[in-house]
Length: 170
Image (cartoon, rainbow, N blue to C red; front, side):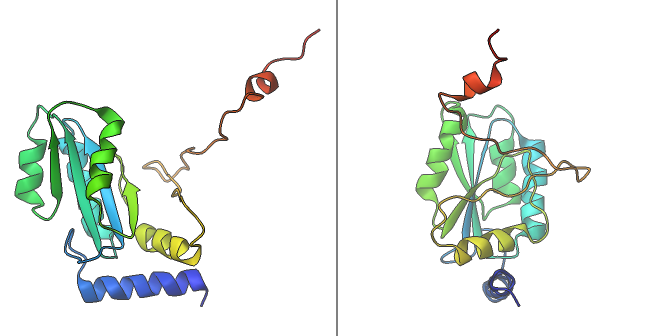
């Protein structure tokens, strides 16, 4: 058994021993931070996927950007283990910092409200990070609903990039 497979198996065993209900673990493997503004429908699907596919001890933190719908009430009523952070104004992506401040997990995952976890994703990511303690960041493979790969990575921009993209001078 490879070290990644072994680590994933151990993570699943810990999840079975500790329970995988959202927010139940003393020291979660992963803190999932979701940011949203009036996204109740999307949030419902994202949290349902987390409930179905977590497979490891985790906590979920929902940072609400001054929603005008019933997102906050709905999360509190239907997912009492989710930590809800209500912000007085919409700070956009910057509000992830609020979730990060509250995260207790060994690792933190930022999950957009319109994204859904798939089976085995979290244990595999945790196993990869455990196997490579020198890694500071890991991004999962993203796929569309039909299973087609979703491009999500590109090179960092550099000063030379605009020159490379221009046609040669004549």
